[in-house]
Length: 325
Length: 282
Image (tube, rainbow over all chains, first blue to last red; front, side, top):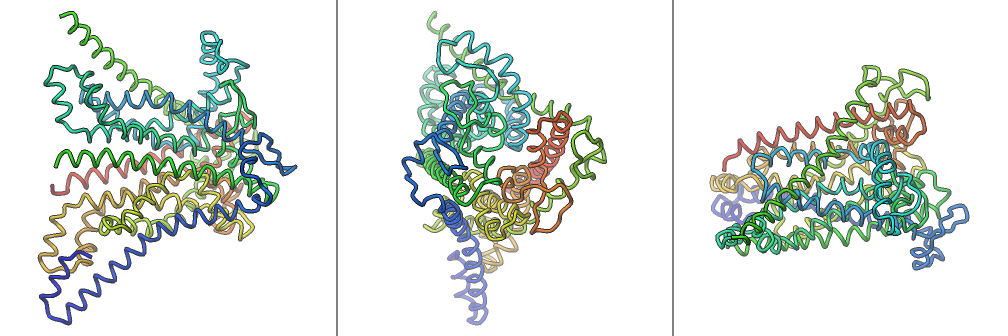
Protein backbone atom coordinates (compact mmCIF):
# COMPACT_ATOMS: atom_id res chain seq x y z
CA UNK A 1 0.00 0.00 0.00
CA UNK A 2 1.50 3.37 -0.93
CA UNK A 3 2.13 5.45 2.18
CA UNK A 4 0.80 8.55 0.43
CA UNK A 5 -2.76 7.34 0.60
CA UNK A 6 -2.48 6.78 4.36
CA UNK A 7 -1.44 10.36 5.05
CA UNK A 8 -4.21 11.58 2.77
CA UNK A 9 -6.71 9.48 4.68
CA UNK A 10 -5.51 10.72 8.07
CA UNK A 11 -6.30 14.29 7.14
CA UNK A 12 -9.84 13.52 5.97
CA UNK A 13 -12.87 12.97 8.17
CA UNK A 14 -12.96 9.60 10.01
CA UNK A 15 -15.82 7.89 8.14
CA UNK A 16 -14.54 8.36 4.55
CA UNK A 17 -11.06 7.62 5.85
CA UNK A 18 -12.13 4.19 7.00
CA UNK A 19 -13.86 3.69 3.68
CA UNK A 20 -10.78 4.75 1.69
CA UNK A 21 -8.65 2.45 3.79
CA UNK A 22 -11.06 -0.38 3.15
CA UNK A 23 -10.76 0.12 -0.59
CA UNK A 24 -6.98 0.23 -0.42
CA UNK A 25 -6.89 -2.83 1.76
CA UNK A 26 -9.24 -4.80 -0.50
CA UNK A 27 -7.22 -3.81 -3.59
CA UNK A 28 -3.98 -4.70 -1.83
CA UNK A 29 -5.29 -8.10 -0.77
CA UNK A 30 -6.82 -8.76 -4.17
CA UNK A 31 -3.67 -8.22 -6.17
CA UNK A 32 -1.55 -9.95 -3.51
CA UNK A 33 -3.68 -13.08 -3.88
CA UNK A 34 -3.32 -12.96 -7.66
CA UNK A 35 0.44 -12.47 -7.25
CA UNK A 36 0.58 -15.40 -4.84
CA UNK A 37 -1.05 -17.58 -7.49
CA UNK A 38 2.32 -17.61 -9.27
CA UNK A 39 3.77 -19.42 -6.27
CA UNK A 40 0.77 -21.77 -6.24
CA UNK A 41 1.35 -22.53 -9.93
CA UNK A 42 5.01 -23.28 -9.22
CA UNK A 43 4.04 -25.59 -6.35
CA UNK A 44 1.42 -27.28 -8.52
CA UNK A 45 3.92 -27.93 -11.29
CA UNK A 46 6.34 -29.60 -8.89
CA UNK A 47 3.65 -31.56 -7.04
CA UNK A 48 1.85 -32.92 -10.09
CA UNK A 49 5.09 -33.81 -11.81
CA UNK A 50 6.10 -35.81 -8.76
CA UNK A 51 2.67 -37.45 -8.51
CA UNK A 52 2.63 -38.60 -12.15
CA UNK A 53 6.24 -39.80 -11.91
CA UNK A 54 5.77 -41.71 -8.66
CA UNK A 55 4.56 -45.10 -9.95
CA UNK A 56 7.93 -45.57 -11.62
CA UNK A 57 9.92 -44.90 -8.46
CA UNK A 58 9.13 -48.18 -6.73
CA UNK A 59 12.33 -50.18 -6.67
CA UNK A 60 13.95 -47.70 -9.00
CA UNK A 61 17.61 -47.00 -8.64
CA UNK A 62 18.14 -43.36 -9.61
CA UNK A 63 21.72 -43.98 -10.68
CA UNK A 64 20.71 -46.94 -12.81
CA UNK A 65 17.82 -44.98 -14.27
CA UNK A 66 20.20 -42.24 -15.39
CA UNK A 67 23.07 -44.44 -16.57
CA UNK A 68 21.35 -47.44 -18.13
CA UNK A 69 20.98 -47.45 -21.91
CA UNK A 70 18.23 -50.04 -21.95
CA UNK A 71 14.82 -48.53 -22.78
CA UNK A 72 12.17 -51.19 -23.16
CA UNK A 73 8.71 -50.12 -21.90
CA UNK A 74 7.18 -53.56 -22.56
CA UNK A 75 9.71 -55.21 -20.21
CA UNK A 76 9.44 -52.18 -17.91
CA UNK A 77 13.14 -51.51 -18.33
CA UNK A 78 13.84 -47.80 -18.24
CA UNK A 79 17.30 -46.36 -18.86
CA UNK A 80 17.50 -42.66 -19.56
CA UNK A 81 21.06 -42.37 -20.81
CA UNK A 82 20.37 -42.29 -24.60
CA UNK A 83 17.92 -39.43 -24.07
CA UNK A 84 20.16 -37.50 -21.70
CA UNK A 85 23.04 -37.99 -24.14
CA UNK A 86 20.99 -36.85 -27.13
CA UNK A 87 19.73 -33.81 -25.26
CA UNK A 88 23.26 -32.83 -24.23
CA UNK A 89 24.79 -33.40 -27.69
CA UNK A 90 22.09 -31.48 -29.60
CA UNK A 91 22.18 -28.63 -27.09
CA UNK A 92 25.98 -28.47 -27.30
CA UNK A 93 25.84 -28.28 -31.11
CA UNK A 94 23.14 -25.61 -30.82
CA UNK A 95 25.20 -23.46 -28.44
CA UNK A 96 28.42 -23.88 -30.47
CA UNK A 97 26.63 -22.65 -33.59
CA UNK A 98 24.22 -20.12 -32.11
CA UNK A 99 26.54 -18.35 -29.65
CA UNK A 100 29.06 -16.89 -32.12
CA UNK A 101 26.33 -16.02 -34.61
CA UNK A 102 24.12 -14.32 -32.01
CA UNK A 103 26.96 -12.40 -30.40
CA UNK A 104 28.18 -11.33 -33.85
CA UNK A 105 24.69 -10.27 -34.75
CA UNK A 106 24.23 -8.39 -31.49
CA UNK A 107 27.59 -6.60 -31.88
CA UNK A 108 26.80 -5.65 -35.47
CA UNK A 109 23.41 -4.32 -34.49
CA UNK A 110 24.39 -2.35 -31.41
CA UNK A 111 28.08 -1.48 -31.94
CA UNK A 112 29.47 -1.87 -35.43
CA UNK A 113 26.82 -1.84 -38.11
CA UNK A 114 25.03 1.14 -39.65
CA UNK A 115 22.19 2.50 -37.56
CA UNK A 116 19.75 2.24 -40.46
CA UNK A 117 19.95 -1.55 -40.41
CA UNK A 118 18.96 -1.88 -36.77
CA UNK A 119 15.14 -1.69 -36.90
CA UNK A 120 14.62 -4.17 -39.76
CA UNK A 121 17.10 -6.71 -38.37
CA UNK A 122 15.68 -6.35 -34.86
CA UNK A 123 12.24 -6.97 -36.37
CA UNK A 124 13.50 -10.05 -38.21
CA UNK A 125 14.81 -11.45 -34.92
CA UNK A 126 11.39 -10.92 -33.37
CA UNK A 127 9.80 -12.82 -36.26
CA UNK A 128 12.31 -15.63 -35.77
CA UNK A 129 11.32 -15.84 -32.11
CA UNK A 130 7.59 -15.83 -32.86
CA UNK A 131 7.51 -18.72 -35.35
CA UNK A 132 5.89 -21.79 -33.73
CA UNK A 133 8.23 -24.69 -33.14
CA UNK A 134 6.18 -27.14 -35.23
CA UNK A 135 6.79 -24.92 -38.27
CA UNK A 136 10.53 -25.05 -37.60
CA UNK A 137 10.12 -28.81 -37.47
CA UNK A 138 8.31 -28.85 -40.80
CA UNK A 139 11.04 -26.75 -42.40
CA UNK A 140 13.72 -28.89 -40.76
CA UNK A 141 12.13 -32.10 -42.02
CA UNK A 142 11.70 -31.04 -45.64
CA UNK A 143 14.50 -28.51 -46.15
CA UNK A 144 17.27 -28.89 -43.55
CA UNK A 145 17.42 -32.69 -43.45
CA UNK A 146 17.68 -33.15 -47.27
CA UNK A 147 20.30 -30.37 -47.40
CA UNK A 148 22.35 -32.03 -44.65
CA UNK A 149 22.10 -35.41 -46.38
CA UNK A 150 23.00 -34.08 -49.81
CA UNK A 151 25.39 -31.20 -49.13
CA UNK A 152 26.69 -30.43 -45.65
CA UNK A 153 27.29 -33.94 -44.32
CA UNK A 154 29.22 -35.15 -47.42
CA UNK A 155 31.26 -31.94 -47.27
CA UNK A 156 32.07 -32.38 -43.56
CA UNK A 157 32.96 -36.02 -44.07
CA UNK A 158 35.14 -35.13 -47.04
CA UNK A 159 37.11 -32.44 -45.24
CA UNK A 160 37.00 -33.41 -41.56
CA UNK A 161 36.18 -37.10 -41.92
CA UNK A 162 39.14 -38.09 -39.74
CA UNK A 163 37.12 -36.91 -36.72
CA UNK A 164 34.85 -39.63 -35.30
CA UNK A 165 31.97 -37.17 -34.99
CA UNK A 166 31.82 -36.79 -38.78
CA UNK A 167 31.95 -40.49 -39.66
CA UNK A 168 29.27 -43.02 -40.49
CA UNK A 169 26.32 -43.11 -42.86
CA UNK A 170 24.82 -39.78 -43.81
CA UNK A 171 21.05 -39.95 -43.54
CA UNK A 172 20.21 -36.38 -42.62
CA UNK A 173 18.06 -37.21 -39.59
CA UNK A 174 20.24 -37.11 -36.49
CA UNK A 175 22.06 -35.15 -33.82
CA UNK A 176 23.40 -32.60 -36.30
CA UNK A 177 19.95 -31.83 -37.70
CA UNK A 178 18.53 -31.52 -34.18
CA UNK A 179 21.42 -29.30 -33.07
CA UNK A 180 21.19 -26.99 -36.08
CA UNK A 181 17.43 -26.50 -35.83
CA UNK A 182 17.88 -25.77 -32.12
CA UNK A 183 20.61 -23.26 -32.95
CA UNK A 184 18.18 -21.42 -35.19
CA UNK A 185 15.51 -21.45 -32.50
CA UNK A 186 17.66 -20.21 -29.62
CA UNK A 187 19.41 -17.59 -31.72
CA UNK A 188 16.74 -14.91 -31.11
CA UNK A 189 16.89 -15.58 -27.35
CA UNK A 190 20.66 -15.21 -27.08
CA UNK A 191 20.83 -12.31 -29.55
CA UNK A 192 18.06 -10.23 -27.99
CA UNK A 193 19.31 -10.72 -24.42
CA UNK A 194 22.87 -9.91 -25.55
CA UNK A 195 21.62 -6.71 -27.20
CA UNK A 196 19.92 -5.76 -23.93
CA UNK A 197 23.11 -6.52 -22.02
CA UNK A 198 25.21 -4.44 -24.45
CA UNK A 199 22.84 -1.53 -23.89
CA UNK A 200 23.69 -1.60 -20.18
CA UNK A 201 27.43 -1.19 -20.79
CA UNK A 202 28.26 2.33 -19.59
CA UNK A 203 28.91 4.68 -22.50
CA UNK A 204 31.93 6.07 -20.65
CA UNK A 205 33.76 2.75 -20.99
CA UNK A 206 33.27 2.63 -24.76
CA UNK A 207 33.99 6.33 -25.25
CA UNK A 208 37.04 6.18 -23.02
CA UNK A 209 38.55 3.44 -25.16
CA UNK A 210 37.70 5.29 -28.38
CA UNK A 211 39.16 8.52 -26.99
CA UNK A 212 42.41 6.68 -26.27
CA UNK A 213 42.64 5.91 -29.98
CA UNK A 214 41.18 2.43 -30.05
CA UNK A 215 39.42 1.28 -33.18
CA UNK A 216 35.79 0.26 -32.83
CA UNK A 217 36.72 -3.42 -32.60
CA UNK A 218 39.44 -2.73 -30.02
CA UNK A 219 36.96 -0.78 -27.90
CA UNK A 220 34.59 -3.73 -28.08
CA UNK A 221 37.26 -6.28 -27.26
CA UNK A 222 38.92 -4.34 -24.46
CA UNK A 223 36.07 -2.39 -22.87
CA UNK A 224 32.65 -3.60 -23.94
CA UNK A 225 32.98 -7.39 -23.99
CA UNK A 226 34.76 -7.77 -20.63
CA UNK A 227 32.00 -5.76 -18.99
CA UNK A 228 29.19 -7.61 -20.76
CA UNK A 229 30.67 -11.08 -20.35
CA UNK A 230 28.58 -12.27 -17.37
CA UNK A 231 25.45 -11.03 -19.13
CA UNK A 232 26.35 -12.84 -22.34
CA UNK A 233 26.97 -15.97 -20.29
CA UNK A 234 23.50 -15.48 -18.79
CA UNK A 235 22.03 -15.10 -22.27
CA UNK A 236 23.76 -18.33 -23.29
CA UNK A 237 22.35 -20.17 -20.29
CA UNK A 238 18.85 -18.92 -21.15
CA UNK A 239 19.36 -20.18 -24.70
CA UNK A 240 20.66 -23.49 -23.36
CA UNK A 241 17.57 -23.80 -21.15
CA UNK A 242 15.39 -23.34 -24.19
CA UNK A 243 17.42 -25.81 -26.23
CA UNK A 244 17.19 -28.53 -23.59
CA UNK A 245 13.42 -28.33 -23.38
CA UNK A 246 12.56 -27.71 -27.02
CA UNK A 247 10.38 -30.54 -28.23
CA UNK A 248 8.61 -30.51 -31.57
CA UNK A 249 11.26 -29.33 -34.01
CA UNK A 250 13.85 -31.74 -32.60
CA UNK A 251 11.42 -34.65 -32.46
CA UNK A 252 10.76 -34.18 -36.17
CA UNK A 253 14.40 -34.23 -37.31
CA UNK A 254 16.46 -36.27 -34.84
CA UNK A 255 15.49 -39.72 -36.08
CA UNK A 256 14.03 -40.97 -32.77
CA UNK A 257 16.29 -43.94 -32.16
CA UNK A 258 17.26 -44.69 -28.53
CA UNK A 259 20.92 -45.26 -29.30
CA UNK A 260 24.18 -43.58 -28.36
CA UNK A 261 26.51 -42.78 -31.24
CA UNK A 262 29.69 -40.77 -31.45
CA UNK A 263 28.79 -39.62 -34.95
CA UNK A 264 26.75 -36.42 -35.24
CA UNK A 265 25.23 -37.88 -38.41
CA UNK A 266 23.61 -40.77 -36.54
CA UNK A 267 19.97 -40.71 -35.45
CA UNK A 268 19.36 -40.22 -31.74
CA UNK A 269 16.70 -39.26 -29.25
CA UNK A 270 16.20 -36.49 -26.69
CA UNK A 271 14.36 -36.23 -23.35
CA UNK A 272 11.48 -34.07 -24.66
CA UNK A 273 11.23 -36.11 -27.86
CA UNK A 274 10.71 -39.43 -26.09
CA UNK A 275 8.08 -37.86 -23.82
CA UNK A 276 6.28 -36.41 -26.85
CA UNK A 277 6.37 -39.68 -28.76
CA UNK A 278 5.50 -42.19 -26.04
CA UNK A 279 3.34 -40.40 -23.48
CA UNK A 280 -0.04 -40.57 -25.23
CA UNK A 281 0.39 -44.26 -26.02
CA UNK A 282 2.19 -45.31 -22.84
CA UNK A 283 1.64 -48.92 -21.81
CA UNK A 284 0.79 -48.23 -18.17
CA UNK A 285 1.33 -46.18 -15.04
CA UNK A 286 4.94 -47.30 -14.68
CA UNK A 287 5.76 -46.28 -18.26
CA UNK A 288 4.02 -42.92 -17.75
CA UNK A 289 5.86 -42.58 -14.46
CA UNK A 290 9.20 -43.22 -16.15
CA UNK A 291 8.42 -40.60 -18.83
CA UNK A 292 7.35 -38.11 -16.16
CA UNK A 293 10.61 -38.86 -14.32
CA UNK A 294 12.45 -37.86 -17.48
CA UNK A 295 10.32 -34.70 -17.39
CA UNK A 296 11.36 -34.15 -13.80
CA UNK A 297 15.05 -34.45 -14.76
CA UNK A 298 14.46 -31.92 -17.54
CA UNK A 299 12.56 -29.64 -15.17
CA UNK A 300 15.38 -29.75 -12.63
CA UNK A 301 18.08 -28.92 -15.18
CA UNK A 302 16.15 -26.04 -16.79
CA UNK A 303 15.23 -24.66 -13.36
CA UNK A 304 18.88 -24.47 -12.32
CA UNK A 305 19.94 -22.99 -15.68
CA UNK A 306 17.22 -20.34 -15.66
CA UNK A 307 17.90 -19.33 -12.08
CA UNK A 308 21.63 -19.00 -12.81
CA UNK A 309 20.93 -17.04 -16.00
CA UNK A 310 18.62 -14.56 -14.27
CA UNK A 311 21.13 -13.97 -11.50
CA UNK A 312 23.96 -13.34 -13.99
CA UNK A 313 21.91 -10.97 -16.17
CA UNK A 314 20.59 -8.96 -13.24
CA UNK A 315 24.12 -8.74 -11.81
CA UNK A 316 25.27 -6.97 -14.99
CA UNK A 317 22.36 -4.52 -15.08
CA UNK A 318 22.71 -3.81 -11.35
CA UNK A 319 26.38 -3.07 -11.93
CA UNK A 320 25.36 -0.39 -14.42
CA UNK A 321 22.98 1.29 -12.07
CA UNK A 322 25.76 1.49 -9.51
CA UNK A 323 28.16 2.93 -12.07
CA UNK A 324 25.70 5.57 -13.21
CA UNK A 325 24.74 6.70 -9.72
CA UNK B 1 51.84 3.67 -39.60
CA UNK B 2 51.99 0.04 -40.62
CA UNK B 3 50.63 -0.97 -37.21
CA UNK B 4 47.72 1.43 -37.60
CA UNK B 5 46.88 0.03 -40.98
CA UNK B 6 46.90 -3.46 -39.51
CA UNK B 7 44.60 -2.37 -36.67
CA UNK B 8 42.21 -0.80 -39.15
CA UNK B 9 42.25 -3.98 -41.19
CA UNK B 10 41.43 -6.04 -38.08
CA UNK B 11 38.58 -3.65 -37.36
CA UNK B 12 37.12 -4.03 -40.84
CA UNK B 13 37.63 -7.80 -40.65
CA UNK B 14 35.54 -8.14 -37.49
CA UNK B 15 32.90 -5.78 -38.83
CA UNK B 16 32.55 -8.03 -41.87
CA UNK B 17 32.47 -11.14 -39.66
CA UNK B 18 29.70 -9.72 -37.50
CA UNK B 19 27.82 -8.54 -40.57
CA UNK B 20 27.94 -12.02 -42.05
CA UNK B 21 26.52 -13.33 -38.76
CA UNK B 22 23.45 -11.23 -39.56
CA UNK B 23 23.21 -12.79 -43.02
CA UNK B 24 23.73 -16.27 -41.60
CA UNK B 25 20.87 -15.74 -39.16
CA UNK B 26 18.51 -14.27 -41.74
CA UNK B 27 19.12 -16.86 -44.47
CA UNK B 28 17.14 -19.67 -42.77
CA UNK B 29 14.39 -17.19 -41.87
CA UNK B 30 13.98 -16.14 -45.49
CA UNK B 31 14.08 -19.77 -46.64
CA UNK B 32 11.46 -20.77 -44.05
CA UNK B 33 9.06 -17.92 -44.83
CA UNK B 34 9.46 -18.46 -48.57
CA UNK B 35 8.81 -22.20 -48.40
CA UNK B 36 5.81 -21.94 -46.10
CA UNK B 37 4.33 -19.39 -48.49
CA UNK B 38 5.24 -21.04 -51.79
CA UNK B 39 4.35 -24.58 -50.76
CA UNK B 40 1.37 -23.61 -48.62
CA UNK B 41 -0.34 -21.25 -51.03
CA UNK B 42 -1.41 -23.77 -53.72
CA UNK B 43 -3.53 -25.70 -51.20
CA UNK B 44 -5.14 -22.62 -49.71
CA UNK B 45 -8.82 -22.30 -50.52
CA UNK B 46 -12.04 -21.47 -48.74
CA UNK B 47 -12.80 -25.16 -48.27
CA UNK B 48 -9.47 -25.66 -46.47
CA UNK B 49 -10.78 -23.44 -43.67
CA UNK B 50 -14.19 -25.09 -43.30
CA UNK B 51 -13.83 -28.78 -44.26
CA UNK B 52 -12.94 -31.73 -42.05
CA UNK B 53 -9.70 -33.62 -42.75
CA UNK B 54 -10.07 -36.32 -45.39
CA UNK B 55 -8.25 -39.67 -45.66
CA UNK B 56 -5.14 -39.92 -47.82
CA UNK B 57 -5.79 -39.44 -51.50
CA UNK B 58 -9.25 -38.01 -51.08
CA UNK B 59 -9.21 -34.41 -52.35
CA UNK B 60 -10.85 -31.38 -50.79
CA UNK B 61 -10.11 -31.98 -47.12
CA UNK B 62 -9.46 -29.10 -44.77
CA UNK B 63 -8.49 -28.28 -41.23
CA UNK B 64 -11.69 -26.50 -40.18
CA UNK B 65 -12.06 -28.52 -37.00
CA UNK B 66 -8.41 -27.94 -36.06
CA UNK B 67 -8.76 -24.17 -36.49
CA UNK B 68 -11.90 -24.19 -34.34
CA UNK B 69 -10.14 -26.45 -31.82
CA UNK B 70 -7.15 -24.10 -31.55
CA UNK B 71 -9.44 -21.11 -30.98
CA UNK B 72 -11.51 -23.11 -28.49
CA UNK B 73 -8.56 -24.24 -26.38
CA UNK B 74 -6.75 -20.91 -26.52
CA UNK B 75 -10.06 -19.33 -25.46
CA UNK B 76 -10.38 -21.70 -22.51
CA UNK B 77 -6.76 -21.02 -21.57
CA UNK B 78 -7.27 -17.26 -21.78
CA UNK B 79 -10.32 -17.45 -19.49
CA UNK B 80 -8.11 -19.07 -16.87
CA UNK B 81 -4.84 -17.24 -17.49
CA UNK B 82 -5.86 -13.63 -18.13
CA UNK B 83 -7.24 -12.69 -14.68
CA UNK B 84 -4.42 -14.47 -12.89
CA UNK B 85 -1.60 -13.39 -15.19
CA UNK B 86 -2.62 -9.75 -15.49
CA UNK B 87 -3.48 -9.57 -11.77
CA UNK B 88 -0.09 -10.99 -10.82
CA UNK B 89 1.51 -8.44 -13.16
CA UNK B 90 -0.33 -5.61 -11.39
CA UNK B 91 0.87 -7.00 -8.08
CA UNK B 92 4.48 -7.12 -9.29
CA UNK B 93 4.29 -3.55 -10.61
CA UNK B 94 2.71 -2.13 -7.44
CA UNK B 95 4.12 -4.25 -4.63
CA UNK B 96 7.02 -5.93 -6.35
CA UNK B 97 9.77 -4.34 -4.26
CA UNK B 98 9.25 -6.39 -1.09
CA UNK B 99 10.66 -9.83 -0.36
CA UNK B 100 7.42 -11.50 -1.52
CA UNK B 101 7.39 -9.44 -4.71
CA UNK B 102 10.97 -10.33 -5.55
CA UNK B 103 10.37 -14.00 -4.83
CA UNK B 104 7.26 -14.01 -7.02
CA UNK B 105 9.02 -12.20 -9.89
CA UNK B 106 11.89 -14.67 -9.74
CA UNK B 107 9.45 -17.59 -9.67
CA UNK B 108 7.56 -16.19 -12.67
CA UNK B 109 10.78 -15.78 -14.62
CA UNK B 110 11.97 -19.27 -13.82
CA UNK B 111 8.50 -20.72 -14.58
CA UNK B 112 8.45 -19.12 -18.00
CA UNK B 113 11.60 -21.12 -18.77
CA UNK B 114 10.01 -24.47 -17.91
CA UNK B 115 9.79 -26.59 -21.10
CA UNK B 116 6.26 -26.71 -22.47
CA UNK B 117 6.37 -30.50 -22.68
CA UNK B 118 6.86 -30.62 -18.89
CA UNK B 119 3.81 -28.35 -18.49
CA UNK B 120 1.94 -30.90 -20.60
CA UNK B 121 2.76 -33.62 -18.05
CA UNK B 122 1.48 -31.36 -15.27
CA UNK B 123 -1.83 -30.78 -17.10
CA UNK B 124 -2.04 -34.52 -17.71
CA UNK B 125 -1.69 -35.13 -13.97
CA UNK B 126 -4.19 -32.40 -13.08
CA UNK B 127 -6.95 -33.28 -15.54
CA UNK B 128 -6.42 -36.33 -17.76
CA UNK B 129 -5.35 -38.66 -14.95
CA UNK B 130 -8.59 -37.88 -13.09
CA UNK B 131 -11.03 -37.80 -16.01
CA UNK B 132 -9.37 -40.85 -17.58
CA UNK B 133 -9.80 -39.15 -20.94
CA UNK B 134 -7.96 -36.67 -23.14
CA UNK B 135 -9.89 -33.40 -23.31
CA UNK B 136 -9.96 -29.83 -24.55
CA UNK B 137 -10.03 -28.76 -20.90
CA UNK B 138 -6.68 -30.46 -20.22
CA UNK B 139 -5.23 -28.76 -23.30
CA UNK B 140 -6.61 -25.43 -22.10
CA UNK B 141 -5.10 -25.90 -18.64
CA UNK B 142 -1.71 -26.71 -20.17
CA UNK B 143 -1.82 -23.57 -22.33
CA UNK B 144 -2.98 -21.47 -19.37
CA UNK B 145 -0.05 -22.68 -17.26
CA UNK B 146 2.27 -21.61 -20.08
CA UNK B 147 0.60 -18.20 -20.44
CA UNK B 148 0.43 -17.15 -16.77
CA UNK B 149 4.11 -16.52 -15.91
CA UNK B 150 5.06 -14.70 -19.11
CA UNK B 151 1.84 -12.69 -19.02
CA UNK B 152 2.59 -11.60 -15.45
CA UNK B 153 6.08 -10.41 -16.37
CA UNK B 154 5.11 -8.52 -19.51
CA UNK B 155 2.08 -6.92 -17.82
CA UNK B 156 4.39 -5.72 -15.07
CA UNK B 157 6.79 -4.20 -17.60
CA UNK B 158 4.01 -2.35 -19.40
CA UNK B 159 2.50 -0.97 -16.18
CA UNK B 160 5.94 0.23 -15.11
CA UNK B 161 6.12 2.31 -18.30
CA UNK B 162 3.36 4.55 -16.90
CA UNK B 163 5.15 7.67 -15.59
CA UNK B 164 5.10 7.84 -11.80
CA UNK B 165 4.11 11.52 -12.01
CA UNK B 166 0.67 10.33 -13.09
CA UNK B 167 0.20 8.27 -9.93
CA UNK B 168 1.61 11.01 -7.73
CA UNK B 169 -0.67 13.64 -9.27
CA UNK B 170 -3.71 11.45 -8.69
CA UNK B 171 -2.74 10.73 -5.08
CA UNK B 172 -2.00 14.43 -4.49
CA UNK B 173 -5.56 15.20 -5.57
CA UNK B 174 -6.75 12.96 -2.75
CA UNK B 175 -7.77 10.00 -4.88
CA UNK B 176 -7.38 6.78 -2.87
CA UNK B 177 -4.58 4.41 -3.90
CA UNK B 178 -6.84 1.65 -5.21
CA UNK B 179 -8.85 4.09 -7.30
CA UNK B 180 -5.64 5.58 -8.66
CA UNK B 181 -4.49 2.13 -9.72
CA UNK B 182 -7.81 1.15 -11.23
CA UNK B 183 -8.89 4.39 -12.89
CA UNK B 184 -5.62 6.16 -13.68
CA UNK B 185 -2.80 3.63 -14.01
CA UNK B 186 -4.71 0.75 -15.61
CA UNK B 187 -6.41 2.79 -18.38
CA UNK B 188 -3.06 4.38 -19.23
CA UNK B 189 -1.36 0.98 -19.40
CA UNK B 190 -4.31 -0.65 -21.19
CA UNK B 191 -2.69 -0.66 -24.64
CA UNK B 192 0.39 -2.31 -23.18
CA UNK B 193 -1.63 -4.90 -21.28
CA UNK B 194 -3.60 -5.76 -24.43
CA UNK B 195 -0.24 -6.17 -26.20
CA UNK B 196 0.97 -8.52 -23.48
CA UNK B 197 -2.25 -10.53 -23.75
CA UNK B 198 -2.05 -10.79 -27.55
CA UNK B 199 1.57 -11.96 -27.39
CA UNK B 200 0.67 -14.61 -24.80
CA UNK B 201 -2.28 -15.75 -26.95
CA UNK B 202 -0.05 -15.93 -30.03
CA UNK B 203 2.45 -18.05 -28.16
CA UNK B 204 -0.26 -20.38 -26.85
CA UNK B 205 -1.75 -20.79 -30.34
CA UNK B 206 1.63 -21.99 -31.62
CA UNK B 207 2.21 -24.60 -28.90
CA UNK B 208 2.22 -28.25 -29.90
CA UNK B 209 4.06 -30.31 -27.31
CA UNK B 210 1.73 -29.75 -24.33
CA UNK B 211 -1.32 -30.68 -26.45
CA UNK B 212 -0.01 -34.04 -27.67
CA UNK B 213 -1.15 -35.92 -24.57
CA UNK B 214 -3.70 -33.55 -23.09
CA UNK B 215 -6.08 -32.62 -25.93
CA UNK B 216 -4.73 -35.36 -28.23
CA UNK B 217 -6.54 -34.93 -31.57
CA UNK B 218 -9.95 -35.39 -33.12
CA UNK B 219 -11.04 -36.05 -36.69
CA UNK B 220 -14.35 -34.28 -36.16
CA UNK B 221 -15.78 -31.00 -34.92
CA UNK B 222 -15.77 -30.65 -31.16
CA UNK B 223 -16.75 -27.93 -28.73
CA UNK B 224 -17.19 -30.16 -25.70
CA UNK B 225 -14.44 -29.39 -23.16
CA UNK B 226 -14.46 -32.98 -21.91
CA UNK B 227 -13.67 -34.49 -25.32
CA UNK B 228 -10.38 -34.82 -27.24
CA UNK B 229 -9.92 -31.88 -29.58
CA UNK B 230 -7.96 -31.19 -32.74
CA UNK B 231 -5.56 -28.25 -33.00
CA UNK B 232 -3.75 -26.70 -35.94
CA UNK B 233 -0.34 -27.43 -34.48
CA UNK B 234 -0.93 -31.11 -33.71
CA UNK B 235 -2.55 -31.49 -37.14
CA UNK B 236 0.55 -30.00 -38.82
CA UNK B 237 2.74 -32.39 -36.84
CA UNK B 238 0.67 -35.45 -37.77
CA UNK B 239 0.57 -34.48 -41.43
CA UNK B 240 4.30 -33.70 -41.52
CA UNK B 241 5.50 -37.01 -40.05
CA UNK B 242 3.09 -39.07 -42.17
CA UNK B 243 4.60 -40.84 -45.19
CA UNK B 244 2.07 -39.37 -47.65
CA UNK B 245 2.98 -36.66 -50.14
CA UNK B 246 -0.65 -35.54 -50.19
CA UNK B 247 -0.60 -34.89 -46.42
CA UNK B 248 2.77 -33.14 -46.57
CA UNK B 249 1.22 -30.52 -48.84
CA UNK B 250 -1.60 -30.13 -46.33
CA UNK B 251 0.99 -29.68 -43.55
CA UNK B 252 2.52 -26.75 -45.49
CA UNK B 253 -0.88 -25.17 -46.09
CA UNK B 254 -1.87 -25.59 -42.43
CA UNK B 255 1.52 -24.12 -41.46
CA UNK B 256 0.76 -21.09 -43.63
CA UNK B 257 -2.61 -20.67 -41.89
CA UNK B 258 -0.94 -20.95 -38.45
CA UNK B 259 1.80 -18.52 -39.44
CA UNK B 260 -0.78 -16.00 -40.68
CA UNK B 261 -2.74 -16.34 -37.43
CA UNK B 262 0.33 -15.93 -35.20
CA UNK B 263 1.68 -13.15 -37.43
CA UNK B 264 -1.59 -11.24 -37.30
CA UNK B 265 -1.67 -11.44 -33.50
CA UNK B 266 1.94 -10.26 -33.27
CA UNK B 267 1.42 -7.40 -35.72
CA UNK B 268 -1.67 -6.19 -33.84
CA UNK B 269 0.27 -6.38 -30.58
CA UNK B 270 3.15 -4.41 -32.06
CA UNK B 271 0.85 -1.79 -33.52
CA UNK B 272 -0.99 -1.32 -30.22
CA UNK B 273 2.13 -1.05 -28.10
CA UNK B 274 3.81 1.39 -30.51
CA UNK B 275 0.81 3.69 -30.48
CA UNK B 276 0.60 3.52 -26.72
CA UNK B 277 4.27 4.24 -26.14
CA UNK B 278 4.34 7.15 -28.54
CA UNK B 279 1.19 8.59 -26.97
CA UNK B 280 2.49 8.27 -23.42
CA UNK B 281 3.90 11.41 -21.84
CA UNK B 282 7.58 11.26 -21.05
